[in-house]
Structures are given as C-alpha cells and as structure tokens.
Length: 333
Image (cartoon, rainbow, N blue to C red; front, top):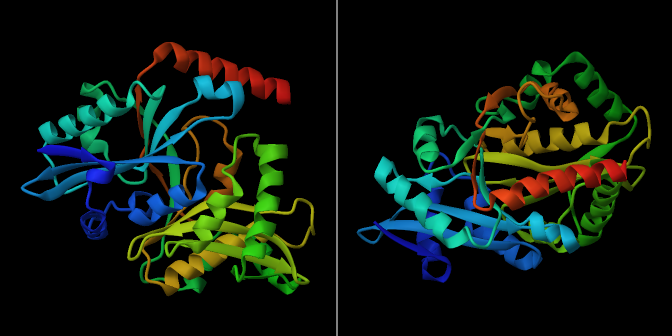
C-alpha cells in the first residue's frame, strides 16, 4: 500500500470513496476541508493509503492549539470521527497509523481520534501501536422510519412539555437566512464560552464557512423577531447530522427553551432529508459527572461508548499541559 497526503490526493476520488462508506461523516469530507481552509483558523491535513490506484483508507486531521503561551503545551492533532476504510487488514491499518505518526509526531503533543463509530474490533491494533484507548460516551438519536411526533413521544415528559411551552410562548425555529443572523448567533455562543464553558472557540470565519457549506446548517431560534439561540450543525447525505454547537441567551425567558428548539430543528431536518441519526457529539467520560449528559439524555437517544484513541508524541509536554490547563481553570474560577 502506498501512502500519500494533502496535494498528492485526488479530491474527487476522496469524496467518492467516503460517500459510500458507512463510517463516513462530514468531518472527513472535502467540504469540511474547505470549511477549515476558509476559516483561516484551523490547520488541516489529509492522509490516505492507496492500493492499485484506489483509496483503501483515509482520514482528515485538524491541528489545533490555544493562543499565546498556552500554544506551547496545547498543540494537538484531532481526527474527528475516525478513519474511513475499505476493510483494510491489520497490517495495512498499522502501516497507515505509522504514516500519520511519522508525519505529525514532531509537530504536535498528541494525536487523538474522536470516534463517531464503533472501532472496538480495531482496539488491539491501536494499542499494539502505542495508541491508548480512552472511554468516552455519546448519545445517538436514530431517525430512520420515524416521524417528529415519534421522536417527541420518546423524549422525557419534561422535555416535551418545555418544547411545547416554548412554542406556545411564540418562539420559532428555522434555518439562518442571512450572514447577519449567523453573526448574532455567534455572539450568543461566544458569550457562553467566555462566561461558562471557558474553553477556546473558533473564530467567526469558521462559523460563516459552515453557513456557506453545503454540508453545514445554521439553525436560528427567534422570539419577537430577536435571535435568542440556535445551533451550528454539520451533516453528511444519507448519514448523520451532528450538533456541533448550540446555545441560547441565558435567562432570556423562563418559559422559552431555545436550545431545545434548536435540537428539535436538527431532528426535523434529519427526518426530512432521510438521515440516519442525530449525533450529539459527546457525553463525557463514564463514571464522571458531566452536566450536559443529563441534558442530552432527555432527548431520548441511545447511550454509546465509541471512545477515543490517543497517541502521545511528547509525554512531558502532555503532562505539563494537563497540569497547566487545570491550574488556569482554577484561577479563572
């Protein structure tokens, strides 16, 4: 198998390859590559293995880091979704992982796959190549052969009641109709991340690129013609829709739950476009408190553990980074 990267890759062949694979996601698409390039804030790399001029395995990697001094101990490579393959052998997967490590290990502190699908059969191969498995949960809400009413009935009673109450109060949802609405929603999200989440957020250009992408959907929730919340989502045709970011104005109205409606809009879009499921993109580590897990659970999805694989290329900086970030978070509190 021959391994190539970036400009060596035929993009039409790449897109055709992942389009027919069950473990494809928008994060491995050429469309997401363009989102990252257009945002000018996310560095990306494509890697693939070719056999007899045909792609057999591939993945798209994003390189991320914090600003300022934190960049020194936070630079990492993230593979959203995991690799996409055509039933490669254990030797071929080993060689592919070695190729990625060789190209990235001197540039980043660690490389991590955030799996959206079940790679448990490949766990021994990863571990044999010094990739550690990290248990990590997620909620998947199946949509096939279901109506919106079916989904609503499967939700917790309080969640259904709050959705109905929000609509009765005059809140509405739909897709963003202008860049101005995207900017308004971004300001709400930015405030949430600054005051509560306290982790870095991509620049506005990233979210505008999602809006302009054929695989991106920006959901807007309004009340009295004011943008009060919404969601930034990515989807892949015939596959899943991913709730990448969602938010609302805090304490806007006790009878309106804007984030609920944003997720309902994502569900509705998925049903109308024949998608398989809504992917909630993470529910924390097992046996650890994670407030968002309960929130996501009440939409009636299935709890899964697809986990993550991590290769630590610079152990000292990895340990230093974990310590420093915890210290910074304590200081911020």
